[in-house]
Image (cartoon, rainbow, N blue to C red; front, side, top):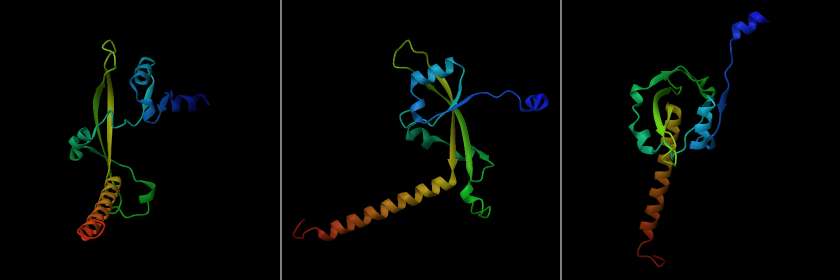
Length: 142
């Protein structure tokens, strides 16, 4: 058993949370307590402009296959790429120290394809609505 314990090594605690974990007071407390954590950041911390500036080509490819893609050929499988940087978050008070956090972006071609199809579907629905309104212009109710 001692050999197995040595082989397994020390286990560190990793806190996994949702976006409610990210407010400044929580982050500061976890950093001060030396707790390792992972959590998705909300749009208030990482805006669309930051995501738009991400260079997907410079991201590292990840050897990961989603369960839904396991039975597909290699060409049909989605791929993932990861980009890492840092961000600084300041508190509401001037006396609050700035927190420098590691930030990881994950790009999934499968999710990007699904988002593209959803946008196309919404656009087609909007076009249909506009065409229907256009046909009714000059009519009794318009």
